[in-house]
Length: 151
Image (cartoon, rainbow, N blue to C red; front, side, top):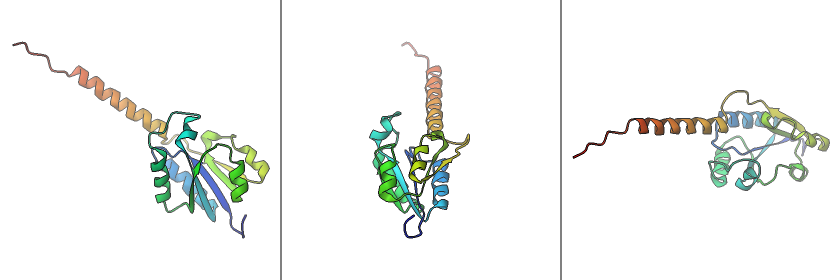
């Protein structure tokens, strides 16, 4: 806490920004007097999964355009120890797909909230849906090729 202000940090890749991202950021905002949002760099994301569809420079601009965050910063590491200490973070909010991963922050006096995404939308599901649609279009185009007429 800084001057009686609760500082909350949330972070993510925020690739293909969707309503569950917005819900998590809004939940973090509801806990905060000051909300800091970290956006994972492409290099960080590629250290544990495939490269994001939307480049970092665009993803951070999308988050900066929201009214909700007070501060938006690049996130270069999954270890939040230093950011918690440097910015006097009181609470951390992250999607429940990371359940248990950030419990170590509790030892630093940070409350950790794992936001439940549920079975709703996710970037992975969006990518899968796009891929399936694309495959279906290709398949239908191959099946409907016109018969070549000989002269």
